[in-house]
Image (cartoon, rainbow, N blue to C red; front, top):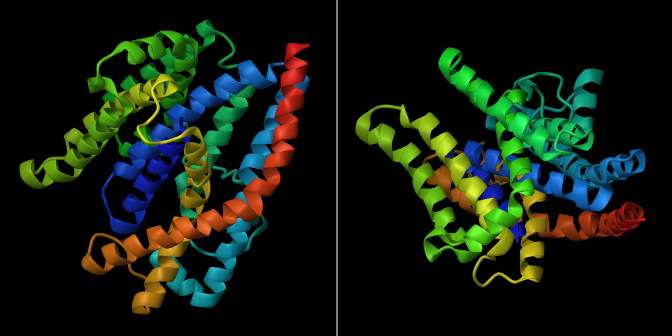
Length: 352
């Protein structure tokens, strides 16, 4: 029951980018990382295995999941920039420039941005995709066996915690907590740890009171994120930012654990999958759609926390969902049959 959760996280990123809601998109990104750490560890153990063939199938399946939809988005983005003007696109988002050098073209096509801080790489036709460099980095480590055993995962978690402590003590700049590739180690390892303790966690949440239901945890996530926005205005301090950042990581860990055994109310398995399929194109497309909507509404690139920015952001959110539905049907569902064949072969090989 993770599909709805993924799309909610994607929408949080949309609100952050298009309507200027501070920081919450960063919290959502680390929620994606926790979920990926759990799911990638789960499928390596239960679908692909750690043999050479299993790792190959895993990587091919990840390729088919990420790249066809992304490449379609690249084409859409280039058309948008050509129609509405590169200078306007660059004003709307400094990263939205058509790549011209071979290095820039390769990075934008491959999703491999050559920097420990991939967010620094310019241009990025789809601005949020720097996080996918981090995702791919940890996919490779998981496929190579980093989360193969409980002991390895606990050592990995300890390394992630140690990194966080050292950063907070000696280099507390936010970029070392969030945008550097190494910062993803803690959320990914938390997700991997959850795989090995999922039965205990699922039993705990299945038997717990409604206080720990996924819906309540989502509300806590929203409240904690809202405090990041409100407290600086009231107390004139940003000291709660790192507290909220890591507290939301704990909440999201609990959310993933809870969703293993307790589905969201009124969300069927079929609906959950359909909603989850939208998360990736929403994440990839929302900045470009926001740009188009602002140009159509106002004749200029406008986003952020203002009346016009919020109006444009809300309309862009609806349009992004609609375009994402079309992209899923045109691209993702056509690729899914090939991915299913790969998964089925991997499962058969794992059982034999």
